[in-house]
Image (cartoon, rainbow, N blue to C red; front, side, top):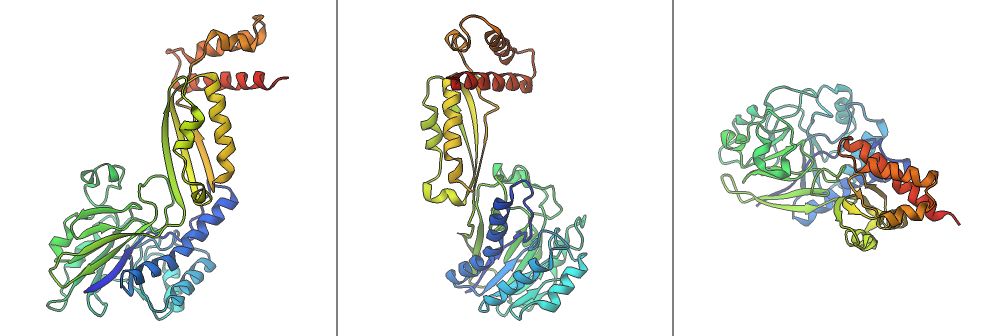
Length: 377
């Protein structure tokens, strides 16, 4: 049985510029730590080989420390062989990067820099390294090259397939690529491991996207995974087992409020366990209708749990504010300036002739006005 771990899109050195420095530091460290977790996953599956299908590095010119520390980490996992293949982010065009890696790599790192077959001692690898950021053609066509008779044939590619949409909602936003989905069949491959798409996808029985080993957005359902693959021999179907490798959880939850519903209980129902929150980036999207007190309750509970998380963001723009005359009376029963402002905002928040954005702005302003009045002695 020939066993290996298929991974891709580690994107070492990714800046995560949208987050504050503390969060960026945790995310970058988790990506570096994925090297050790991949080695551990390989051992657990009985493999001594990790195939990285492109984009090991996020940029063509990563900081020297990023490159050196990655190679050091792989070298420390000396019982594991690592195959690195250029992807579109770290293509062969980044000649200085790959010259540096060639010079500094430890003995257990194998570079797939050309489309020539590589003997892996039990199987032959047919790589399709990215020549540039946008090669513009199907580089996997070279996988039809001959290998010794009876050899297990593995392909390693990077990029989108022709018809991502055919794979369903899990890949609805997939890239429009050049790789033919039946490349494994056309080239006589026993397994084709692909990179580029950061979610894990089965294309055919023997063609898979591994997904990134450490998630980097809310886009994908899988949070940091790799694939443990076993082949009994040439021409045999692969045994493919997804394995968890991620440290940081990216979770997006959507909830719908109804008037009179306990907003705090609803939010609490979609929160991860307390022990998981330090390693979780959570995005909560709230829709539906809510009364004034519900909105205030909602904002309070979100503010209260935010420090539990690595990062928590919320989107309340879709909530339609439902209020009664008594709510307006609470602002200013005398009909003064505050009451007039509240009535004007209430009208705008429900005016179908206004844009959705303008209605949300009015609803948010009205909610803030209610909160301001409630806080007054």
